[in-house]
Each structure stands twice: as C-alpha cells, then as structure tokens.
Image 1: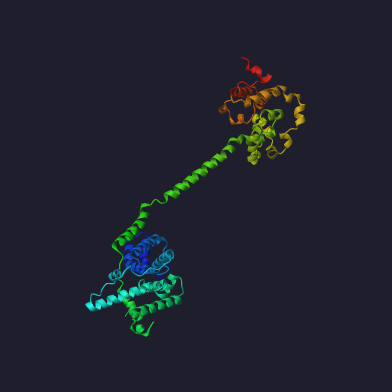
Image 2: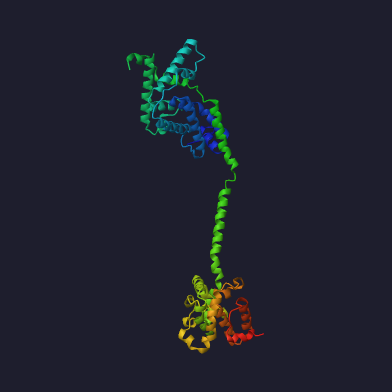
Length: 187
Length: 253
C-alpha cells in the first residue's frame, strides 16, 4: 500500500515512531465519526464514552504493531467493531437508541440556513432517522454506520466484519429498506 | 409495509443525506484531553528509557561472570593434581626402592590413592608425553601407589609395577623398619595435628612411610645431602613421626 504524505497511515506510522503531534492530527480527523459510531451502536452515552476511550487506548498501545496493509480507518473501525461485539456479547441485550427523546433532539442540530418551519421539519426527520436506526438489528446498523460514519467501502466493511462483500451488500440493503419503511410509516 | 408508507418513504439517497446532517456530535473535551494525554505519555516513555540496553547487558555480564567462575572452579582440581601427571611417567624409571613403597603405601596411605587415580584418569595422555623427562625420586615412589595411569603411560608395564613376589623376595627391599614405621605413619596421617598448610603438592601426594622410604633410598645411593634435606623437610611436617633406624643417627645432637 502506498503511503502518501500526511495520510492517516503516514500519521500513524509517525506516531508509532514517537511523534505525538502526528497522533493529535490523526485523532482530530477521526474522533467525531468514531464517537458517533460508538454512540449510535450502543445507545448509551456514558457507556459510549467509556468504550470510545478504550478504543483509542487500543490504538495507542497497538501503535508498534500497526502495519499499513489497509487504510487506517479500516483498522480503527475494526478495533472499534471488535470492542462493540465484546460488549454486546457481555450484555446479551440491545438497548434503545437514546435514553430519551430530549437527548436525541440535542444531538440533531438544526439547519440554521433554513426557515423556522423547515428547521423544525428537518430536525424531526433527523430525530426520526436516528430513532429508526436504533430499531435496526445490530449487524445491519453496524454496516450502515460503517458506511455513513467511517465512509468505508463495501469491501472494507467486508474485511472489517469478516464477511463476504455480498453479505455486507445484502445487510446494507436490508438496513436501508427498514429505515425507509420506518420513516415512511412515521409520516 | 403498506403502500402509503412506501410512497412517503425517503429514498436511500435522502436517508444517507439526512444521516450525514446529524453528524455533528463530538466527544466531550474531557475525553479528548484524556486520550491525547495518554498518547503523549505513551511515546514519551521511550525517551525516559533510553538505557533500555542496560538490563540485558547486565544480565549478560552476570551470566558470563558466573560461567567464567564456574569454569575456573572446575579446573581447580585438575591443576592441583598435576604432580600426579608427573608421577606417572617417572614410574617408568622407578628403581627398586619404589617397589618397596608399593608394598607399604596401600596400608599407609589408602586415602591418597583414589585421588591420584582420578588425576591420572583425567590426564593419561599428558602423563605419557612427559614420560622420560622427570626423575624425582619422591614422585617415583608415590606413583606406584597409583597404578591406574601407569599402563597407559608406560611402554613396559612390568617396569612400572614389578611383580609382588619379587618385591617381597628381596630382604633389602622389604625394609622391616619401614614396615614397622608404616602403622605409625598411618596414625599420623589420621591425626589432625599436621599443619596441612605447610605441605607442598608433592608431599601431600605421598604418605610419611613412602617419604621415609625415599629418604633411606637416597642415603643408600650415597646422596647424603639430598637425603638430609629431605629428612629436614619431613621433620618439619611430621615432627613426631617415628624414624627408621637408618635415619635416627642423623637426629642425634
């Protein structure tokens, strides 16, 4: 794999060599997406914060063993997915997306460029989308989040999940169908 | 899924766009600080442990030192019994008095023989190499008490270990005085009064009886000065050991 200057992979290698500033840049690039991925996979903010920190600690501790065989994001979300799977296995249950509607409403920020009515309508749509996302089976939600948050390709998600590309494609299709159905029924 | 719901359902592209509009949630600042602080500390550790090589170096040095000491200690017994190596070839040239000692030494110095045997077994080749170079009479007599290496070192075994009947058949060689002295010397060996620190390597490898026998032999050969010197050394180490009649006159004031 070709390592471009200033790429995620180059920054991770630089960090492994002792460059703390490289990690800060890398962290800045991925912190939001990873946090949302964990938060929306777990539906529990306190737990999400705990696991989010653990995932970054794994990245830090594994810095010397990191090899840029694939994109850094693929590796990062592989660590995150494994941690979430461990958690789900320990819990043996699935929790609702948000603790309450008020918290969900805070997460979805309003589009400031739109008028008040459109802002309200768009906000409601986003809240509804996140609510519907929380109702998806875990494997379908994970595939959807890896595509939308981590922006991984189907091939990368397949590697991440340890499945074939067609399996991932099927899971994603089912996930989108269920979301469409959920949001269409809400209207 | 009813048709009305599907008609109102957003497309997949709309869902994707709607979701991306929600991507504004960020981790709290306290989490950012904690993660970044940990990351900095992790890479700062190697700077503090630049002397990482000290531990393996110290361990290697310790192992080397231990092995060296162990080898030195292991070599120590072989070094102290080198005279036994010298004794084996000397036996090739052993004169008749050595045969007499052969009859006395097993009774007088039973403890010394195994030690010399071990030494001779350890270095049989060296004993052969030095065969003709050493003619020390004291060593000659001592070697007879340690027969094990002799066949290896000597080309003519009968010269090293003369047949027992011959030794007993000679009245001169039988030396009844020495045979009488043997029990006393044996008792002396068992006594702790002897200062072992004053003993040389050659003296430690022979019994008092054998030594006295050598001195008598020297005197009979006319080597008076050498015999007297040997007797003085013997007296210094065994002041109370009884002397044979042939030597007692030397001690008269």
